[in-house]
Amino acid sequence: MFVDGQYEYMLELHRGCSRKCAFCAYSYYSHPYREATEEKLLDKIGDICNIDKTPENKIILTQTSSHHYSKKLLEYLVFLGKLPRYTSSIISDMYKYPDVTDLWNQSRSFFRMGVEGFSERERRRWGKYISNEMLVGLPGIISSETFRLFFIAHLPGQTIKDINEFLGIARKMDDRYPGRKIRIQAFTTTCTYNHTNPIVFFEKKFSPELRQYLQEHRTTESGNVRIKIWKNEPQKNFLFMNTLSLANRKLSKVLAKTVKSTTKEAFNRLAKDAMNIGALFSEYDPEKTFATDHIFHYRDSRNDIRNRYKKILQTF
Image (cartoon, rainbow, N blue to C red; front, side, top):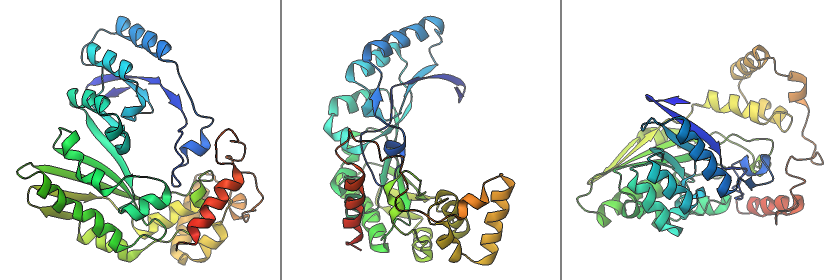
């Protein structure tokens, strides 16, 4: 892979994810969770370095979450000068394994961090346990000036109050780290309901009020801390992606709520891409087998997953 004037070699570290966040299909779709042995990875890294001795070229391991790497593997990549300049990271792990975080800091890596929910309430509801205190404390464990955070707009039950809770982070950071220049790039996008992820049980609604509020507060500054909000999809895109992601689930109900022009455009695009329109119209059968139904080696079986989200429904 050629990126920004350098080659990046990708090795597969693991498949699937042991976490079960409601809005992510990865751990439910790519299963069971398994990973390559450290010995095989070290040997493969050595082989790559013997073939390509160009110092600028790097090695990345999928998935790119920084704290999926073992410390020994990281130290080896740092020694070889092959650690990539960017990585995705799970914030709770950055606090849990400070020695690994320090290794990434030494490489001047650029972190991408999925926060998903604007408030603690949202994150706890959907399984992403990141506290506001963790967000405020990021400058204390990361040396870079810029933080790139990712959020999901229009999650079920999301409110303007949730967004305000995140915007208040700038003020708290400025109080804690006076004089330090901090730039937060907050990327917001809609949640795609995938066939395999449990959030499909929840009605997905576009909120014009939330979108307008995000646009109005696109830039928030407090002292030396600045939050810049990037991209938030318009309703037309939201509805079309909803159409695709709810295929063979609740599509007829989704289309019944769309305006005619949007529905027509969605179908034109579907037809152009040779999608099976008939299959999209079939109503979701509650007894239909999920891709997750046979993951019995996890604590959560099919009924456990369903019951978990039934309980969440009661909180709305």
